Image (cartoon, rainbow, N blue to C red; front, side):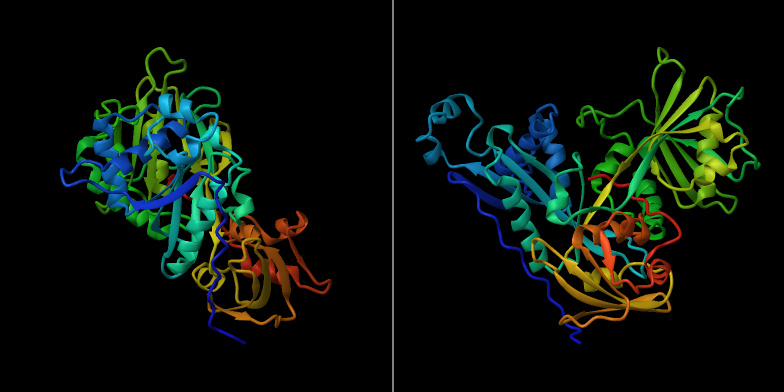
Length: 461
């Protein structure tokens, strides 16, 4: 049995003729302003996501956050010499964006993921993926993805992660949906199916000045991150928006609509915060929208919601991006119909790069031993691995095809979806996405691999 394991770098897919790719760090010039390449990249991303163009002042705020995160910016560009020979070249030269404006964008950087193990695991985060509608079917996305996954493998990252706008794109690159979130609507009135809790209030909820909360937001989220399987470290955007310094509609302005409350527990410690805004007097029923709610335990989360529901005039609360799964709030309500799930969506998608490191970093439901044969269309981590769990910790070894009596086969996309425990191996078996010999003990695998609670990622990137 070989305990040493090195993933293979995928073959980098070529670009169509006339396109070139460049990767550069998000950077500022000597004058402290974004360099031309970073500014053009940021503008192209906004254009790709149908957002308003960034002004120079907005770029001077947003690009430094890219640099703070250490983001690497990969752009695909049209070669002007090639374009000049094409029928559309003259039009592009006269009316198109300049040559520094990429027709494909891809940014990546590193943060930690709480996989439920003893320590967080490093992950290569992927964001700002766009392809110009005028340059589709030229291999742009496949080139950017394979080249940057190859770099992540070379850098020794055990997994890559992204959040997606379209759910049908990234499975072919080995990403699997690994966490979900719900939107909630709460009837804040006291009549009919209105809001009432079974337990008395605990601690105190205080209204605070949003402009003073940046450090509090960081500290509270750090405790949440340490205790929440599925959590991903946040980017600087969250602290600037959460403290009102950036208005999401225009980051050069303060968001004067944001309000903040904190829950102070009986021992004086802060258990959580909520940033929210009133949706206007013309909204019927009068609605308070929660922009961000982070609590280190269920009690603080319930107290924050209790306070919001009790505010004068408020008849409805909307809470997007809440944890999917069993919700203590529903059980705490006198009438559970006061809480309504309005939508459910996937959030975090994971791509395993090194199964040995990744599986050793996750939580496990029980001790046991099994082997996994993983298929991978990109060839990064195809192979057979023996997993032995003792006292809640796993030892994982790559083998030359040697298996245990409990042997299972799956693809890397399925492993990504199973990794944080959002879905059961038994569900994946019924879907035909994990197979085994006829005498396999599926109950034992489920007891070992599956986890009793759902993961939750409160970070979008």
